Length: 179
Image (cartoon, rainbow, N blue to C red; front, top):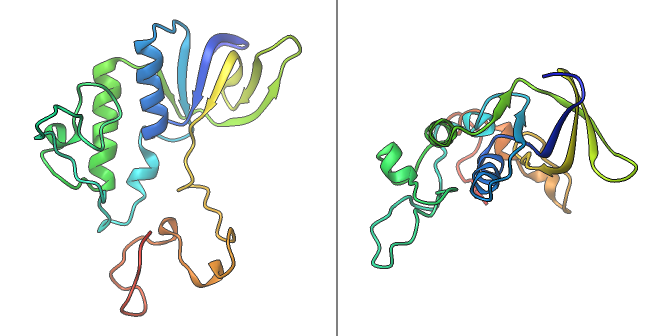
């Protein structure tokens, strides 16, 4: 990235929200936008416990032609792309990567946004480890999985956030309720 590169919109995060917003910006013909992620496309999904699957089924066979429940872009389907009804985190990240390639989205990976500040007269300036960027709008699409709040309600100290589980097999105890 060049110093003080200018954009109409910057999206921070290249997961489902960031890639989905990027598809919408492209559909709206927003010319100068980019999607930034410190890791890779769908990195949070790749951190899911291996046994974890999407709870909503991916399927497109309904009488009304509705999209796949896990789709984030018009006329796409994780079910068709992945050949599975309940994608794993790795599988869903594969779908996001394939969609970004197919749509030729301007994704920049390995970019760590370190600070955002408003500019006098409108817009924002983003300090990144790759340089400074300016944008009229910024959409924060970084999810909670990598930044969980583990104290957000009374009794939270008795819970385990999914991001803290690498494998459910081997966890102490017999009963778990996932929400």
